[in-house]
Image (tube, rainbow, N blue to C red; front, top):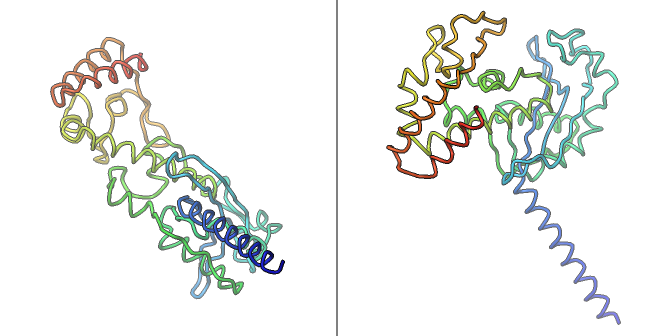
Length: 293
């Protein structure tokens, strides 16, 4: 009887260990994009205070959001938080006065970060340091990633400074994703969208390098370069010289006439077919042409 009980306990321990390993492997294959909003020290010796944490867990194979979490955080010293914010949705002293302290949300933050791949913009130099500091202040071990993707470094290396600079707000404007709100959950979702757009551009350029990297960039009929800032712009952005400039510093697009679009599509199709002689490109271009019409 005793032997049977020992065997049962041993079996249950092995099952529990197997389940734990399975969970750990699953977590290690997931990416958590996260962002912090903090105070900005204005005198020597003053520390950063975490005011907001936001994160989304993403499946790397489908890029779908599996889980999200965000919370405001009341710092120990409320006087470090500004009474007013220059941003419309900025964090003020009044906003965080009734929020939980970091110690109250530390367990949840730990659970969403620990054992996963961490991702974010400039997290290696800023957010990761602030997370470690916050856990040290409450004498708790900080979460540990199994890998890290800092989109600032990745995009600087792979995408380059074609948008102007590598700030998230600049990249978002470049792709027409709207203005950065500087709120944690909004910013991590914008970060993921920026990465998707950059990856798509790089994929297209690598798929047809002789066309997209040379002929399309050099052709005056396809793209032009803005004289004001040197940025490479799409034709519909740069060709409309009669449209008034908006307060955001860009020009409204003027739709192509159908006849002009048809000629352009035929021209592009001929270039692509000559370059690669792949019949599938015909169907892709026809589909794109029908959508644009």
